[in-house]
Length: 441
Image 1 (tube, one colour):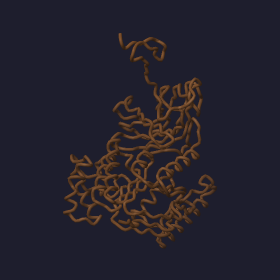
Image 2 (cartoon, helix red, strand yellow):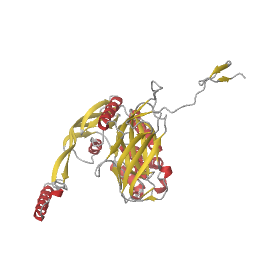
Image 3 (cartoon, helix red, strand yellow):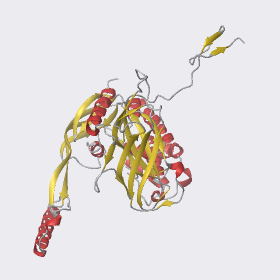
Image 4 (cartoon, one colour):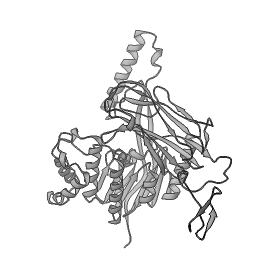
């Protein structure tokens, strides 16, 4: 049966008005301060009367989060949406989910839409998990009988049965995401929209989510999926849309989309061995921001390291308040977007709260682990099972080259040393080290 378009975006645009403080340190008199304040009050009053957003700051400018976006999504397609942070991915999903209206252009959607965009989206904090399941089903137009038929499956998938009658404002971020995804995926929408919020869940839950989205897609429903996990995108999606600066840069096969996205990432980050951020920049979260991430080799200064040397990773951060149970996480990611391995400092931390201050978390990658390929260093932090403080963030790229006595790399994300031996099956034979090994006595 021929499929038909369920989502059509035509010349879609979304504009925001942002404010700026102009020459704040340049006030020279009390009169100038009063004059500037009076102008701001007048401007905001006019904006209020005209129905425009009230924007803080002395001056405003238009920012186009999306501009001239055109695409069609057919029934049953699974589409991955890629792009660097700030490319417009989340704004696009909010427009498609009818959370915000486009400034220009149009979107036509045929079918019931269920979306999971942010932790707690669609939940009333004062209602219990049970009540929110029925509330979300009613919003989707389902009858109470239809919701009841899916209720047990939702609770089982989410794993929050013990807290089902607790207000969701008491839930951790991980619990909220588990319940929200279970509701979104089990209430049989024609179109399922999922943002990177799945990164809040643990690895087991993420695998369950990917499996459920595959099941939804096999049932002929449409899935739009935003993720920085290239492995998940490649396994789930056939088509990819790459956004850049609010516009569609590429629309085609998922492999080509991933390749283009990673090439853009290479150009954006370059290859260095140290990344620092000023006071108002860099990755940050609630009460914590990164100051510096550095790499140093036991032989080479970087950014190109030898595979047979140890590489030390240093993560400096500023913690503004006491945090209990926090862990710092790093990932080493291949050029294809696959996570080679992850590591955390959780085992060296105590369960007591870490006091405010500046800290350095440091680990060493042993020699003869990394392959002779480019890698991306990714860093994040959070409280396991409760809160993501800084989501996993691409910091920068570095290269690994082989030692002088080897000529070519082998395939794979890593190349750890393995113990090999060589023996003859019919008698004595020299092993790889030149010694004799006999299997026949």
